[in-house]
Amino acid sequence: MQLGDILDGGAEFHPVGREVEFHVLKNTYEHVSDEKIAEDRVVPGVVGERQHKARVKATLRFVDEQLRHEGDRQADRFLRESPLYQDGVIPPQKRTEEEFYCFLIRALRNSDNPAEPFCELKDYARFRRALVSEVVSYLLREYKRYVADEYPELATPEQVAEVVEEALGK
Image (cartoon, rainbow, N blue to C red; front, side, top):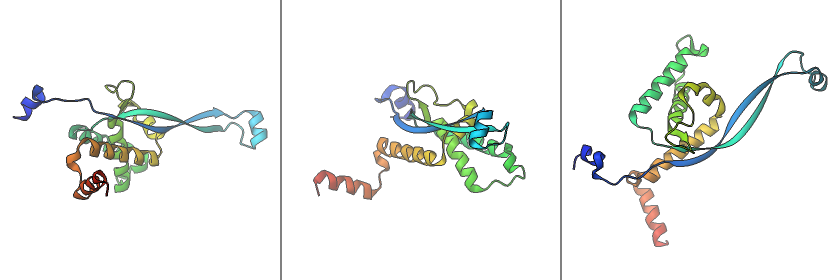
């Protein structure tokens, strides 16, 4: 059977997605009052920054190659427009990090309605500020684990041997 026939109903499909929980960060800014100035010895008129975090749920979905390429283009555009890289020199590590954020904004979906994104692309800057790098690493590991669980044919021989040993009780 050809792929077109399979995709047009020649196979049984099931919904995919994996719920993940993680923390997001929110920064709030406030004008420092005269009382705070006296208490904390801060400079008058300085805006105070506070950080808050919340545990959230989202659904991981597969990111196809077209979406990956769109993410890579978005990362490139974001970095080139950044005042930090106006000289045109973007460190490879920074490009990779940006590609991770662009990948995740496409992989994460609304847990209540996975047809919707967890975060709209127009809110990308807010998305970046909401995730600390360790959370990004965690989400990437969860995505890889999700792919490995959904596609057992990707298992290495060592992983297959380990599963067989566990099944045999050795």
